[in-house]
Image (cartoon, rainbow, N blue to C red):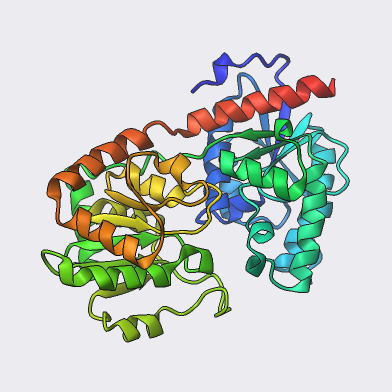
Length: 398
C-alpha cells in the first residue's frame, strides 16, 4: 500500500459516505467498496470513519471492519427508495458528519448536501444525464440533477475517473479543471486468469450451467441505450457467416428498469436477425460468475457510446480476455492499445469480430496486452491519489 508516501500529520479523520456500500454490485458500489477497503488499511495516516443511515443493511455494516461508524437518525418509515436516498444525501449525511466530528467527508458518487460546513470531496464518475438528454428522465429527475449539480459546485474538490469525464464536468457543471482530480478505477484482485485446478473447474461449471459449448463473444455492462447492444447484435449477425466455426454471443445482466425507451428489448431484434439459436441472454450473474465468464470468453466486446471510465472492459482484460472496444468517450484511456479499438457501428463490430475470431495469434497477442494493460491500474494507486486529494483539501481548510 502506498499510504506511507503521503505527508499527512496528526492523523486527520475522514468520513466516508457508505450509501453505495449497500449496492456492491453496481459500478459506484464497486468503487466505494474497493476504495474504502484501501482506506481501512491506511490508518497510520488517516482515521477512516464510515457514515451510514441507521437502517443500513448488514452488507454495508460488514464493510466497516474495525473502523469507526456513525449513523444518522432512522429515516421516517414512509421514506423508501429514492426518497430515502435524497433524505440521506441532504439531511442524514449532514447529521452523521456533525456527530462524527470528522475533519473531512468524502461522498463517493454524484451527490452532496447543499449545506455542509465540513470540507468535503465528491466523486463524480460521469455526467451522463447532462450529456445524453434521454437519461435526464422525468421532471423529478431533472430537479434532482439541478440539486446535485449545484451541490457538486460547492465541493472542496471533485474527483473523477478519467480525463474525458473531467472535461465533461468542466463543460457541464462549470467547475474549473484545477478543482477536479482524476483518480482512475481498477479491477479487483479477484479478476485474474484461471490458473489453479479449482479455478479452472469453476469456469467449467459456469459454462455448463449456462449451456455454453461453442466459442463465444461476451458482453457485460448494461442494457441501456448508450450500451448500443442492438448494434452489437447486428454486427455479430453480420460476422457469423464469415466465422471459421459457430460462435455464440453471450449477454449477461438485466435491464435496470422496464422503461423500453431507455432499455430497448433485445428479443425482437434477435428474432428479426434470425440468430436466436446463437444468442444467450443469461440474465443476472453473480460477481463470481461474471469473473468466470470473463475467463471463459473467446472475445469480450464492449461497444458503449459513453462511459465515465469503463470498468467492465478493464475487468475482462484483467482476466486475460481479448477485447474489442468502442473508441468513444473515456474508453481509449482505459483500453489503450491493448484491444481492438473500433467505431461502435455494426459494420466495424462485424469486421473486428471476424478479424479476431479467424486469427488465433492475434487473440493470443490481445490477451497478453490485456493483462499488461490491466496491471497498470490498481486500487492502491486510486487510494493514494485520493489520500493526496484529502491532504490538499485539509491543507487549504486550515
